[in-house]
Length: 484
Image 1 (spheres, rainbow, N blue to C red):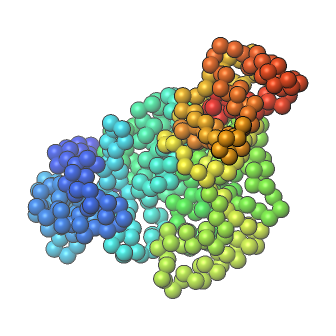
Image 2: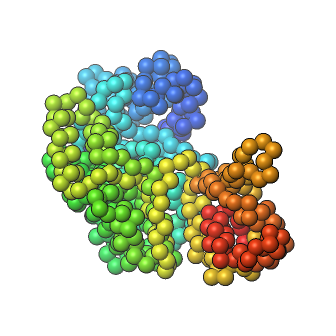
Image 3: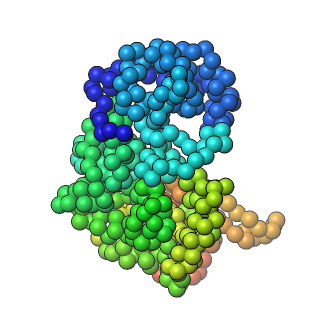
């Protein structure tokens, strides 16, 4: 496809056509109904095709872009008056015999009270059809990209950087709270479609070509976000999908993003990214990541860990290679390569780096969390970084969402187990003893930490409780069970 931009007049007419037809998330949902919408989410289009037989402009747009069905040209002309030829020339639409089909996905997307249209390559796998993707495939709205959206801390910023922008979904979400956004990618097609998406949504983006931090050498940002091509695969250029794989060895692309982040962040700036990392034989994955984050305040969370075979199967399916002649040879080569790299498992999760002095907290947390998690990420860092060396003078109160669960034999004097559980954020659960449960129960803001511990020590006729319980209290503050 020849490099072209969307002319301003065409952009305005497309927006007007989408709005007039109610080609929005709400409009599509209303037209299709619950069953057809649910089926479409499973990549099944038959029900939605049945619901879009009237032939009006909304039906045409749904069939073109969401169902990938060919439509008579006269219906396309009706939906986009006078613009069909230009949309064909741009490669947004294509000739399909005597009809017209979509060559790109133009999809409505919404969150809260905001709505957009996102331009990307066509969604693969509809109705069981699956072909291998082109190497420069541009991924649309995907679970991973939405996970990063929900992870991002809700701050206002002067400058932000989106590395590996893809279709530009992160930049759309940042546009209403960041003054200047730079979006980069190594895929020229991704940059072109990001510019088109930005133009269609009236978002001003500074779009640049290049790898990692090369396009922003010497610049600093308040916020860096990245859903990078983190898949750990053999460096075979001929079989590489740009949106998910690089020529970097192992997890080096993630390592470089993290290591180099501080020099591109303002003081107190943030870097947040999704990541895969190798769990290498004889090495602790947490220690490896600590070597990347250095002396910066950081938090890495491993949401899932796969063994090499599971990992290879996941990404071969993603590439649409199941059932194809090359599947077994690719599977075998990939597994052999991981074994040569001493990889015993692959971790999947996210890394947050705050550009202030601190250390890394790295943990496994495969459990359900509240979404969006970004506000909790910000709150947790503030708690850790604001924690005084001496806690005894703090006045604490219990979190509003805190509940206590007890279990034990009926009639027993004390419960066998006591669990404090939060309903929000990471939804932590902490098993505590009767002393710590009693301490938490007394945190109503009236007494200091030191006064409560002294009172408990006197009541229980025990020696000073400070040494044993202050570290546990610090953890409860960090995780939001208690608030100063």
